[in-house]
Image (cartoon, rainbow, N blue to C red):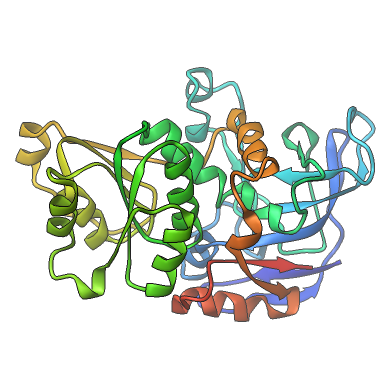
Length: 341
């Protein structure tokens, strides 16, 4: 089969023929319909190590159809449309047993611990498959796996957005715009912050009641405090940059909540006295628990989340490096791209 293979830091993915994945008794073999291009993959390309040493096939936002299955698999038929979650949790460790499966100490991530979806086929344990209803488009539905499920967990479980909350969201990329929509669905009054007017216009369409172009604002946090009167109830950072995390912290009211969704390996500078004296909560948010995937899929099924409008670019497997170049450059026209083998 054809696959885009990662060999080493700083090098483009190589398109080549590789053996078909092995299917064990409890596995599904899935013909990949689409796999999303995510900034997590960019981190690997830039040197963040994968658990499986290269060569490895990246890609963790995968949808497809069942091509074959192991002898012990039940309840699944050839041709079924399925979604593959990016992380498989063990269900047995202390984090899983206390309802924190996103922090599973034995977790296995597709395209990190094992080969992923930038290929024509992928094999994985059938127990982790989620069937996709006919109302969910198969190709665009791939982004539910991460770009939609991650905002759900961040908004519902970590930010705990309630009706009437003033929620400021920093970053209006694919995950950021889905976070805008998710917070709006939860009843929040969303203020969206980005540096591209094109993305802010999309944030308005997703439900934002106010947008701020950070390039045109001298003090973003002050603008947010002025708009809300006392500061945001909740600030969510969906970029992964020290400056915007610090702006998020400075934009919340006393007793406010800051949720960091974006990844960065860099340190940030926050005033410890403010954290204590103002009782400001700071939370991280990672992925989405498997128990929430049926709810997320239903949001798409019933038209509450439109995956088609979030997928702005499609790339053949041979064009995948062009897609990552656009993502790297921060092209404002790119919200979410998918690779179609």
